Amino acid sequence: MTAADDGVRDIIALRIPVPPSCDGWRLDHFLKFRIGRLSRTRIQRILEEQISFADGRKVRASSRVRSGEIIHLDRPAPVEPDVPREFAILAEDDGYIAIDKPAGLPIHTTAKFIRNTLTAVLRERYPGQPLQVCHRLDRETSGVLLIARNRAAARKLKMAFEHREIDKTYRAIVHGIPSPELTLIDMPIALLDTKTHMVMGPTVGGLSAQTEIAVEQAFAGHALVRCHPLTGRQHQIRVHLAASGHPIMGDKIYRASEEEFMAFCDHGMTPELLERFDGLQRHALHAASLTFPHPTTGKPVTVNSPLPADLQAVVDSLANPQPQETTP
Image 1: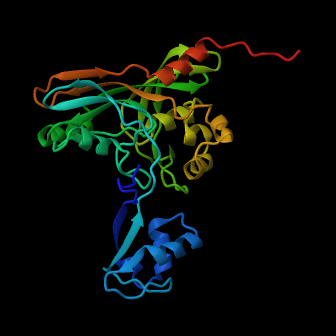
Image 2: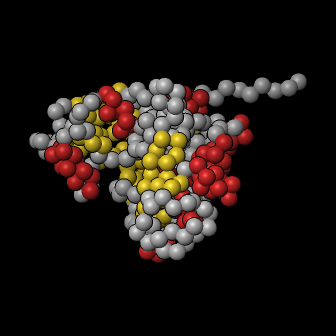
Image 3: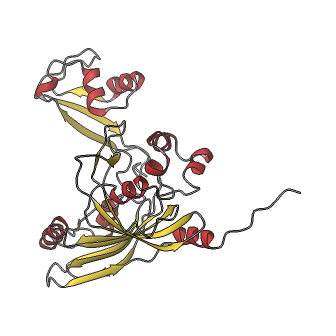
């Protein structure tokens, strides 16, 4: 939760600079441009309660913003959704910590999550230590996550990621059973022009992206697959599997749709959305293994994470389906 201990919600102080391209715009139009997805009613409420000018002039919707000035936006911190804040240590030494990130825990601060993030939990658990997260996992993805314990280690590990010296393996539960011939998905992807500005997709001329896949276990209509990304594009595995006809179970964007994902973000999980998301609260993708050069010795280190209980339960149910009851 983001409420202060005395019951008063924290205030997030944002300072929004006005670029030259927006010089002379109406204030309400500028806010709509910078924040997005705001109704007129919401903009008016923000103008009345949260906006101030640095020079103290009166705030109106029709006020003109000036290039170079700073718009002050002081808003109550959102009430954050509950997330798992505990994680297991898979391996560690003086240079790194490899944790087993639970599904649902975001890594960095967003509009919705401030204190309920991995970086915030790390500050609480390791006060005063200069820890740095070296790569990213989507909020709903579980598994191995590498953290540097000092700046020198962070620099070497992040460079190893940049130079593709890190070997990653994921496990995913997908719809359908990939054919034995489908061992490599070589498909350029790019950010698409959509409402959320976060959906990736196959695009001619996009960034090169390759993912090796192998069926680990086949069921009736589903499969557990191993995925070895040769490149590290955003949402790469999710996009590649969906584009090949085998979307990941529970994927709110690439198995369902952007509209249903937005509905989930705005209103939470409903029975109708849960059905569209295969009955899963999160997508069935797990970072199973990570091999990296040790930041001090350079020797390869491999860290493994077993399939978590929620995904193992899905695998078990697919492997041993219960007979459906029939009405006499």
